[in-house]
Length: 105
Image (cartoon, rainbow, N blue to C red):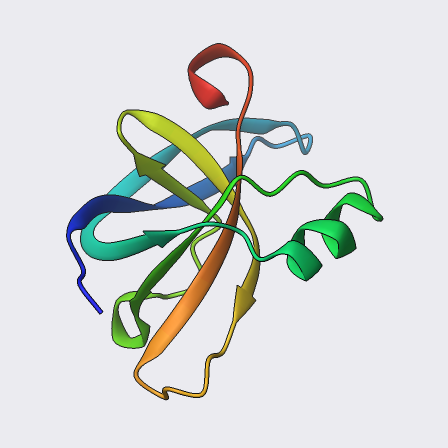
C-alpha cells in the first residue's frame, strides 16, 4: 500500500462567549501521508440511506489520527463522516464527504 497523498488533519478549538455564542475557532493542521481510495459500494449506499454523500476514503496510519473531523486534500476540505478499522491494526480508514460552502466551512 502506497501512502503518496498529502492530507492535513484539522483540529478546531471551539470557544464560547459569556452567553454561550460559539466564537470563530482556532485550528491546527497536522500533515499526514495517506492512500486515497474510492468509497466502497456498500459504504456508499449505507451513507446515502441516512442523508450523507461520501466522496472518498483515505487510509492513514492509526497513530496519526486523534479524532479530527475535518481534513484538507488538494486545497479542498472534507468532513470525516466515519472511521473504519481494517484488519490491519496499524491503519485506519477515514470515510469523507466534501464540504460545500465558503472555504468549505
